Image (cartoon, rainbow, N blue to C red):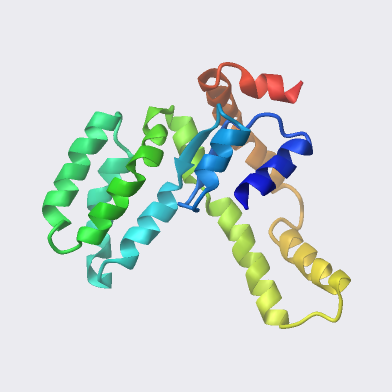
Length: 197
């Protein structure tokens, strides 16, 4: 399934992908490896945290989050391993499924630790995308059903336009990406610049 989708995307002109951030979708990392061999597959840190909370009682969420933060903000992989060992010591008996979740995702989580802080900030900040998706879902759910495709598209368009009605925030969003684009270009040896030409 993923191989078909990614091959179609490549056939449409996407010749290189620097990084793919996903949340443990079966078969996706292998398909990416085949279609774009240089791509780094990264587990979404936000989804990894959310999945951790699924296994924990609500009253423990804050404590768990506090002990996991040093893992994904560590300067190096070794430092992250040390912080994770501390987490496992503290919570492994009560929540072994959380420890196993992180251990299983570790190989695809660790590329994140090799990046510059600007790249880490962008990779970790999926909130903008998720915010748009949530707005669209809310608008569609409120409407219930649509008599035709055009009506559905209009509903989605109106939900997106309501995020920035004046259009002034676009310039601010672009400025936030400048340092990240520089970090991406250096980290990926100019592949980002080559893709834009």
